[in-house]
Amino acid sequence: MLTLKLPNKFFSGLSKFIPGLGLINTYKKEWLSKDIAAGLSVAAIAVPVGIAYSGLAGLPPETGLYSAILPMVAYALFGSSRQLMVGPDSATCILIAAALTPLAAFGSEQYQSYSILLAIVTGILCIIGGVLKFGFIANFLSKPILTGYLNGLAISIITGQLGKFFGFNIESGGFFRMITEFFSKIGETHFLTFTIGFAAFVLLRIFKKIFNKIPAPLLAVIGGIAFISSMGLENSGVRFVGNVPAGFPDIVLPVFDLGILGTLVSHSLGIVLISYCSAMLTNKSFAVKNGYSIDSNKDFIALGAANIFSGLSQGFVVSGADSRTAVNDSSGGKTQLVSVIAALTITVVVIFFTQYLEFLPVTVLSAIIISASIGLFNFAYLKKLYLVSKNEFLLAVVTSLSVITIGVIPAVLIAVGLALLRLIAKTSKPNDMILGRVEGLNSYHDINEFKNASKIPGIMIYRFEAPILFFNADFFKKRVLEITDNEKEKIQYFILDASPVLRIDITSSDVIEDLIFELKARNVVFGIAKVNGEVNAILQKSGVKDKIGKENVFENVHSAVEYYTVK
Image (cartoon, rainbow, N blue to C red; front, side, top):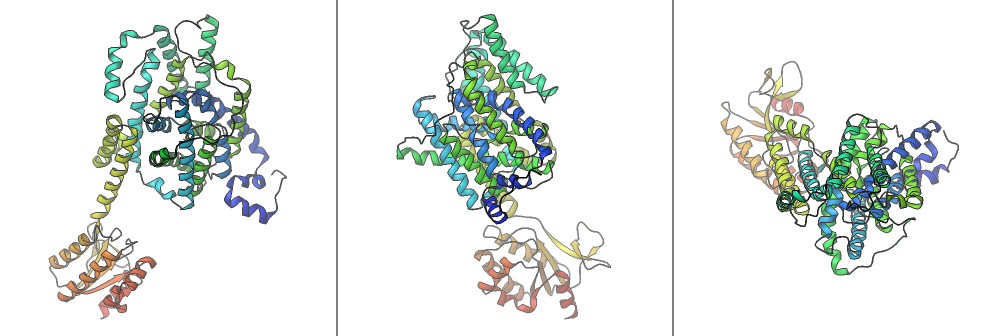
């Protein structure tokens, strides 16, 4: 271990708020070489990708570099993941452009000022979400819906880059109008621009498939600049990035009209939902792979801190970066120190090497964006969805189509609506079952799945596999009365196995009370088993527990069966 130690009480208290400080007392010397190598590899990807994605967001190239410095340090301090890299992300960048284009001229100073404010607002919302322990929203957008959204986003991104890739301007907005204009102008293709872009694209795809540990975007950038300079093609009609200011950015607060704040907050909510859910998918997968757990609420706060620091340093909204996270993992990165090393490396580039970016062809950046967007597609998962669940597959397709047809920001609302409909559909009419006793055991199982499970004469054991709430309470009551009335043998006792019923509300407690009386009218006693604390408290406060009777409340199903059998 490294010898630096902090006083235990001070350190343990501080590290609860800044988890990254835990490295000071636990860092192993043998990790350092791997973290340095991984940090340099991440920086090699982050520099060209940051420049490319800044254009996607409608911002100057240097902002993509600024967005990859302080945000990475902030996440290293506040985040719980050892692998996740934050920075410019293609999905987030197109959301930025969609949010700001109606508010200011694309690429203008006002546009950049709003972008800074958007990052700060997004960061504040993330921190509020983490403090209020809203980290669970990472599970709100199901993987099928998020996959559909990212697939649609990939199509939108690629469509938006076609003009730059082929060397002509596309003025139209919207997927179908852009495609129409692209084909109408295909004859205006600038051959040299297209050739350079296509060569860069082929290089990126080959290296991704065969030499995936080599930073292909960096090679594409260096190759593009070297080709233009060596061939003297500065005046050939190829579009270049142009002047990129050198030096570390000033820390600034944006000047803005309070009237715009509400609009930016509404856009930020959608950006927070998409970027956080996407980041947590990446975060969880690499945490599982490396054998540790993450804290979604701390990561919500960390993402917020990263965005605030991005805005203050003239950057834009950042998120979890899949490609850089994968590079970190494959390079053997062990800790959050990788982010700090990558940030320091990018700082060196910003201070000393930006002059070399002036003749970087824009078509190379388009090739990088198009190649990265192909990585957003997940056809294998769509195929799996189609085979396993046609309904989930349909949700993914509808989400993709909504992104393409109505735009990336409105499609967030569609994604949220679909997620809510999916949740309500699953819980309004959930699975339920009649339980039978397995011979020789004290366990009770679904009589339709277990052939050796048999009903107990005079007793109906029923399991409802969902919380009982206002939108499914009537369905619950209807099902109980149906199975009781349809039973051939006379039922004297009804036992609800409440183990899956994690919550009830006042509406459902009233319905349960009505059910008790309707069963009583049929000469059936209502019993309940395995009630959790929250459900028990509501039944107690609402008076329903008194209606059930304490003698009819049991710790488990077997106790209920024994009691009623003897009785």
